Length: 147
Image 1 (cartoon, rainbow, N blue to C red):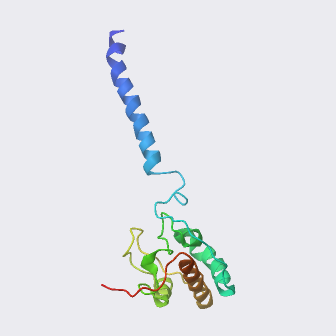
Image 2: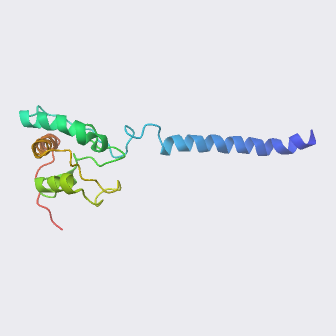
Image 3: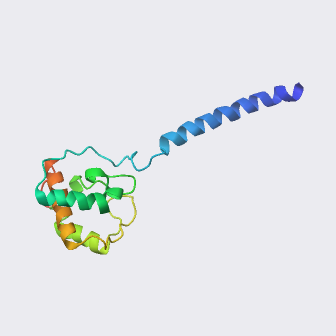
């Protein structure tokens, strides 16, 4: 009995710390990282043009895994429906370069974006139209870039 009386407080503290650690791990590292994202935002989806609807299909196939549904972002990639991507800061040519050549991490902590060679020029044009229509519906418009 004497040994168990000494171990009881240590055992209690150990169980308590394990419980706190488990709760903290669930808070900081949720099970579903793809849908539990601090970078994910709410996106208003407008009535899309025919070209943008084609772009949505291509976006869903090639971009949504990292950039999220409707460009809302995930833990793997930033939201494209964000003012940093307004046409005055990131032109359509910036999107073309990112898809064709990849891009180094610069605005967000997600790592480098690899090139997406499977995206055709026609799909890319439609994807950009889709993103721009989403941006406009969410109040993101051209603003001159000033450094």
